[in-house]
Image (cartoon, rainbow, N blue to C red):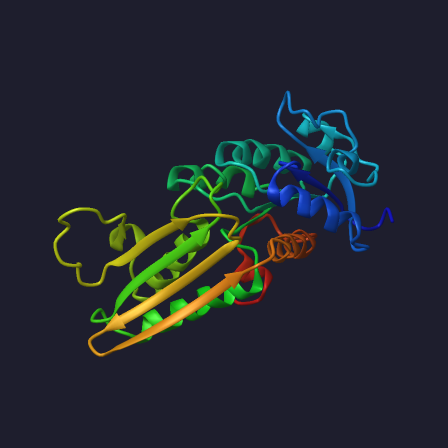
Length: 270
């Protein structure tokens, strides 16, 4: 087993962290060697499996990422932007592949990942699923074919506990649509209409966000013009698809040259 990569999960108690712990513990292609939580969390010092209410996994939850990363060849990170930036620096020091599923980054925060990427592999994606990344590729292609007379609207729906909007996946789709039109999303995005907004701007990319219940994730890309519409859609019903994608990414990154990559690279869709 020592010849397979050791993997650490950050944000171990979160929705994605729990799914990752279970899948990694059962995956023969890798070893679960660490689980990290914030200082003061009630899981600290406990076996990760027992903390989830199940059988022991043989991994004690820690609040010391330096110690945990020292044993790892890969880090899977679904936390928060500032936490992920700190983990990126530590993963680079350990020369470990850092898979970032965290969403809500600003452009300035994304730029701050660059120093770490000079020393280690970073795979960052707003969504780790195969289906969503195929949707991104389709969105780029359709946007490239259709002219500005086709309006583009992106609707995303998630559970009530999600804290960022639009979702990272919605922004991925928006970026793909903008790239298809040879533009930057920052120049075309239109978010959160309310009140007397006036008519829709030509060539703009609109976003809308819905929150409720325990919805895992739904994303729609609408292309609309006079007399016809095209709707591209992806519905996720199981968080396991994101966890399996993250595991595929951390394994893909082993032995790669340092740099920033995406799931499009992992899936060969770039």
